[in-house]
Length: 396
Image 1 (cartoon, rainbow, N blue to C red):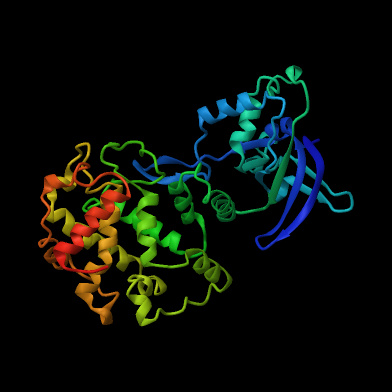
Image 2 (tube, helix red, strand yellow; image 1 turned 45 degrees about the horizontal axis):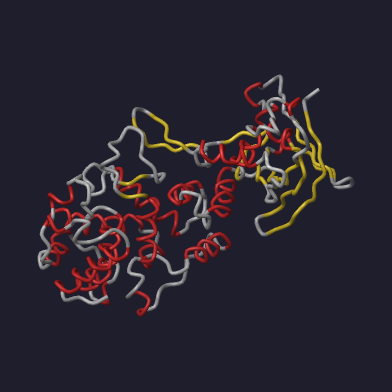
């Protein structure tokens, strides 16, 4: 007979669909739960495929939680979120009971889901692993347990990988503890168009192309990429996406919801006034992300050509291709672009040589792109942007 566990639960109806809230002993959840960590994997010799949806487990955080669960007032009141295959879940509405069991198919063993693999953790991995390492509540040595530790669990049954990624991203994007680059990377798994997904693809495209000014410069998951020189990866994907997205949408969440509800329809065209701030909006609406990528490429290729030594330098303190330098140049992109297109030709491609004509007016030497001249943070970013605007005689 397949191994199983049963516990009380309630069915919840929300816009995303049905899910269940249950109460389960931590030991039982630990026995059936696993974590699908988002990581990089080699495929055909190239490090270009991402797997999983979770962030890497933090040993320090688990250690802190291990200590915490030994205290007399330890509590985890928020739900651990799990995803379970329809093959493994049985809901009894009459008794409000959820049963989770392993799935065994003797004719097709590759379809088997073992007891330890029933539940994929979407959120709460550190809480559960901290409990499993707890001194007074040792899930690996039950005889040492001094008392129960029940957990609230939210169970999504039959959610596909896109839905799982969406749940994780929705729960965690607003939390500073979660790497935003990971959340934006998860947008790729969604089957719905969104500003987040489009900006993610543009970042990936510029990072992958060998002759791109951003070739192997962007940390896809916000941390050093295996197989690359970490000194060369000066920007996180979150920095890139969040600097580009304001030119695509003023309400990214609203856009995504509209496209989710009306997949066959396009977003409303922008007004002439909106074009002056949302310079890439029309291209995005027309699904021309490649055109946006070409413009951003040409713009930064002009910067690279104007200050080649600074752009390629890996010296500590060089800010031209780091967060504050990049964000200042991204804010300067709008006035520079509009000065070359005019208000009537927003969406037009602008070449590297045209952008270079503007940067040739900027009186900044390559050695000036230093943290002494432009300090880290918003002050250095603002100072660089002000200099770009003054020398080019453009206005924001």
